[in-house]
Length: 429
Ligand SMILES: NC(=O)c1ccc[n+]([C@@H]2O[C@H](COP(=O)([O-])OP(=O)(O)OC[C@H]3O[C@@H](n4cnc5c(N)ncnc54)[C@H](OP(=O)(O)O)[C@@H]3O)[C@@H](O)[C@H]2O)c1
Image (cartoon, helix red, strand yellow):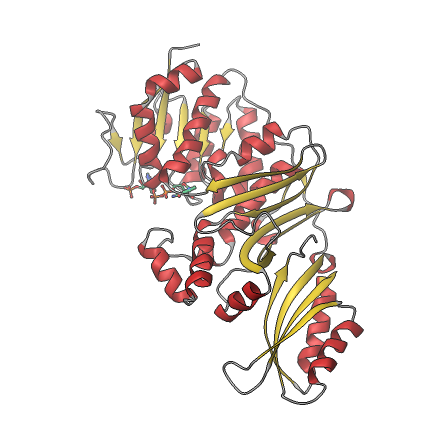
């Protein structure tokens, strides 16, 4: 094996800067571990004139990324530009030239992972993407490697740091989503356009990638049952807290009959005895259930330049070790989706009901009559108006049964409003 391996870097932003710094500062350590030293040959950015915070030690900084991919001294291309284009074209170009690609681009891998990995295989190249899920948490390595003998039945995860920071702040300090978002933006936890995080897209992309590796099926991100956190009300954070729950944006996937899968990202009330309960602030956690290993959880920093660079550069080390025999691309069967309406869920529901005798009992009866078990009902005094409130914890029933029963409840004359509903994980005891 050659004593050095040329590296091309596309992007020198938050992640690219930390990657460049590690490649330049720790070349000796990385070389020892990889068996050949990764050497940064060329770096592309949008604006090559802008001063940078990392000392590139005379490595050329260019504004044409194709010159990085085409550089004959570049054997491994690291893509940390982000977005669909030009990232997709650059990666395809590199793979078609037989170059190995390491990427942190979750949006791209969620949409085109299988097709890009097939292209890599055709050209004897490798496609590495550890950084796409949970940044420095070795989620991909766990799914592809350590749990390679297991049949994985489900994944439950908190994989979006921005929404976790916001929900934690709202709950602890009783501030609105708007205020928590403004604070998260100021502290660098939220991007200028936070839609991908708030609307659950970022979590959906990561869930699609994990499910691809865990279940061997590729689901398009648009097919994930996805609800973001924009409508989360402070009152529900307080009430669920009083009932022993915390609200998290939970990404969940499971397999059903004949290998069909269900993927969802939804705000979910998590009970105190669940391992995801205390995963607060910017922490991420991924809980994977295998038939041999049982439940395995990874928890830690799921974003940030350095944590993401940890995953990117470890992929570079592993890719160098395997330059002559890239791993097989993940198996990919056509995706069959379970009927989301038939998937069983439990819920937290908040109603405003008229202050009249029997209203409470009739509302609960309507749910039970339509197949939704009532586990607990708690009266709460009025807020935002004269009507008393009723909190209901429902037991497990198909989502469609819940929806129909709630429609009926909503139509009752003494039910003023269904203020909110949340999915709920039932406590184990
Ligand atoms: N930040 C995180 O915590 C994190 C975590 C996990 C995964 N990721 C993923 O990592 C990737 C990079 O994220 P980031 O936060 O580092 O982004 P970023 O800070 O916005 O950096 C993007 C970099 O790409 C360069 N760039 C943009 N368009 C380009 C083009 N057409 N040609 C050449 N260079 C171009 C930019 O150049 P200029 O510097 O000149 O603008 C910048 O250096 C994304 O896929 C993201 O999803 C990020």
